[in-house]
Image 1: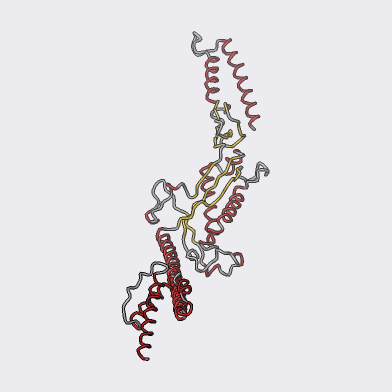
Image 2: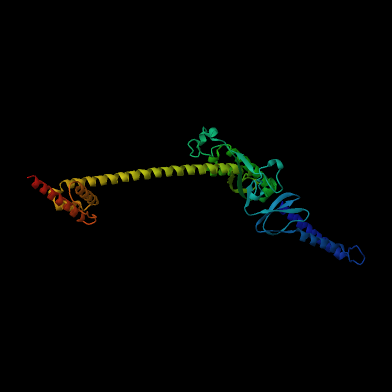
Length: 387
């Protein structure tokens, strides 16, 4: 159609030039002086018309010529001829178009008061209600799913505010204009479809399952959007497809309201505190047990040492100095020797001996020997007196 239009336009321009030449040569004019010659007037109007008919298309733009509103053909970037008053030029971005649903973060109304209406420049959030564990527990699609846990705080029914993102490119601008009209209308339909898909998929899952199935839900969203736009570019030109290619369609955020977030934070904090208390209690119990075992082992070892030392003292007189020397090599032995030294002094000796501090190897031995010597002399004297 465009080529036919261009041929007719060129043909008409040639006809007008021939007419202009004839009028100029024949001096056909409004006034007698031939100042307002028809030929020159028509030629001037042709030149003005030609200037108004040239348009430019940027390198980052796709454009199509519309003949009385009907899209005719796509034009390349650069200077293009669009007959003024007959045709118009429609432009769209050649780059990837990204839309956030329901809107950019600053555009979403977070007041939560829907009764007052949406402020100018704001959009309502997408609110999707989830299911609960009791409803979904018998669903075979989620049987054995680790995210399906009755004790999980996110296994209850909630209403979430969801944000999604869709990115697409216009591949056939003629189809796009014919079947969808504009990017603004495309965003509206994409939002409506995305909202329907999100609410449908969220209603099947608990919040915990939604988080676990994030990628799966995004894949479902992309598939449904692809069906909406009929993004098969091999379809006939008169097909109802949008002429676009969907690059991505995905969930990007789920906003749980402030009160629920605070409650979940308290649950998490309580669980962490409970775990900490349990760990501290186990540590204290283990410490006490180890200390008790340590003391018991020490007392046992000490008792065994003292018993061994006392047993050695019973035969000290028969084995003499060598045995006492071996006995005094251990702290327990020295302690027993000192104790035995004091006992002998006060029970059997009739005189006092200043005991050694027991710090040296022979201090305790010397003290014991001195005491034993005194005891023996005392016994000999008593025996002699009896005789």
